[in-house]
Length: 240
Image (tube, rainbow, N blue to C red; front, side, top):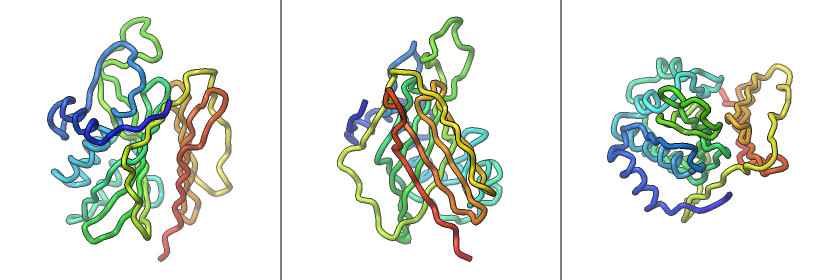
């Protein structure tokens, strides 16, 4: 399923979710359909929180315990925050696209960021729904109870020219047809690699970091018979 989400509708969604960007975006129910607007709203709330409290504080509040960032080596968020320097600039950012698994529990946002000094770039963030409390007995796989969205992977890079902002945010949900399976692959020699999967395996993401610090992040979405690559980011090694 693909679609376009107007920005005013997203602002309304954030306001309805609690009235404050610093609050976790929670929802409850019995197996609602996948809703990419939820992770777009989470991303926008993440940005708002960063402007209010600073980027590090916003990362800590919105990231999962095992969240990964790149410095350029893959680093747990908890360790990365210890390395932050006082006075580091806080970027502003906007999601341009959102992709979600069929079960609505894993999603990926990608878009643009800017710094006050004029630097600009792109980001890609992987979000997962963190359930709270006990699941009802015999609940279907697509059941989404009370909880909140947390990001588990965040990366990006600078660009020489800003990305043109789209008029509408593009969204796409993985097909619920067929039986997706996890693709098997081995990392290049000397590289560090990890693959993440949605619970229903209809969305997967892979990151590879080479010995020189260069990396790639690829996101694939199930189309009913196979996987489409919807994001393929590459980051060059940093020069000394």
